[in-house]
Image (cartoon, rainbow, N blue to C red; front, side, top):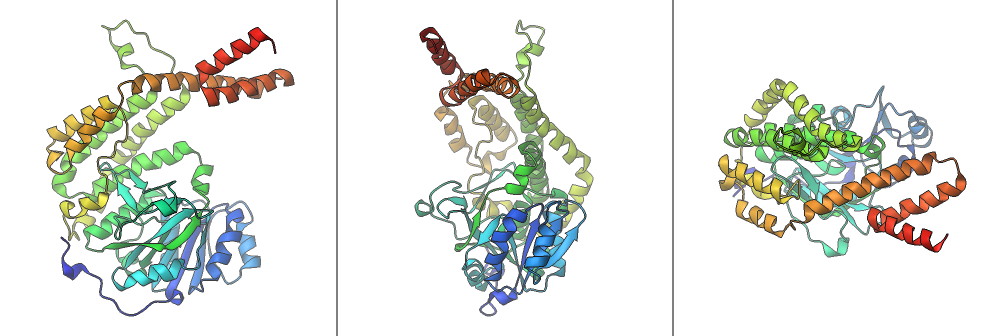
Length: 446
């Protein structure tokens, strides 16, 4: 149980006039025309936009249309963490409200979050899709190797419940006491983007600061517009790297000594699986020959390995940060783990992978920290034909990729049209079924 002395003492009722709203923008002119008006109607103390070297007319638009907005200009894209920290240092409000540039705020966004500050200095908001029908963030869940997910994503709002307190708020919509944010060092700027909010939330909890979830504090999200523009491979790299950085900094000593070796081992195992390489093709005692590996699979594999190498390269600096975090620890891992919600959520839903992971967890004595028996039951629920289906899907994907290339490169409009129809069939029916369908059509005559 959390000691009563860790409770935040209320001071008085709050208003939006005490809040500095901060958003980071990078080539997001098309979003600002929705976001800024929704913020102005809330009447916060100030609105701060940190522009990350946009090449569109974002800054000109803000200057001409919304002169009351404070603009901080960076010469290049510095990600999410550093720009928010920069704005926080210059902010004048007692509270900071962070919001992504591809959102719009509900009229009750700030007031509903401020209502929870009678007992908490940090409040997470609920994030919905643009129409307000489905969930984008409804609380937090953390896998024990540092991989976070947004709870209930894609679910209908009317069909979900929520936690009263969460491990971490989403950095895309949250409220925090400014003094506390600065005392904690803000977001870790080495993260650049992705999971910096997870790290901050975990650090806050282990220092004794509870985080509330306010479901009535709502924003509406277009959906990862900035990250998507940089490509999924770059985002996956940040996820793998930052997950490792997060667990290194925040687990207590006894736990991290056991989990960190396992984190590196499982990263290597995932890399091998992502590559699509058949290990048997490397063995002298096997007759299996090596097969051509597609570039996308290999990139997925290298993502894990590059992330591990980069974490090892910056390990001395990360251990220095860890020492500072641990020096302020008020709560133990056992106090915080219940907030993870689903620490043994499988990263790879493959019986062989999970069985080996369970073996390592037991070998390292982590079965006392996590409920491994429930995790083991999951393997029996995974159909053993899954690997066969995955192999079929890989072949189908390879066929679809080849056909897509042929479609885009084919000079004959008539043939291009036929190939396009075939690709659509592949996506709808699967490669094998599409071939069978096309053969039948050929026999009947086009």
